[in-house]
Image (cartoon, rainbow, N blue to C red):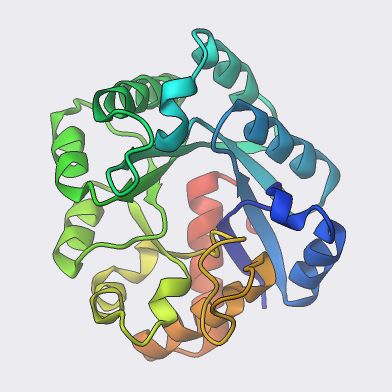
Length: 257
């Protein structure tokens, strides 16, 4: 099988002691590709470095809503330069997070809007982080004259919200919580999303799936979420792997082979 982890943080300090081993476990588990996603400028640089030195690793660069308050004045110029690098396949992760509110909401919205405009101007896919802010994000999307291609990463909403995002042209990505016993809304949502809009991810080192819940996550463990997705859609795992692989390659504009 060829499996694509569409969102991970392999640059995170939790991998400092065994990053190369985690990368090898990823390859051994048939996870042939992953996207290492930045949350601010330093982490974005680390993601680019990993992508430049590891086959199958690609990078996304951006300023997360948690970090929005600390974005330097010239951050857009820096991101613009990063987005021109060959192993960078998306802008992200960007969005709104009202669960922690680590940045003021007006600042989150401004930084989101600025980055979205940059992505549109460069015709780059976008990775969206949305937590406890589904209503505001839907309103934000509806207010835009033009939206980029993009992913609703680590989807946490209802089946109705998933359908709304699909209508807007977005892909929906599911992470470890899909495997949790107390996640009926996610399991219902994954059955509502068209197969050509489904993606799978780890968001590692966070959100380990069952049966690894409570331990550090890593790209190799995307197979557990993929298996649950296949079960819920009544498909063989290898077929779901192919579907999500092709979807990821199309979105990120990477050759399938």
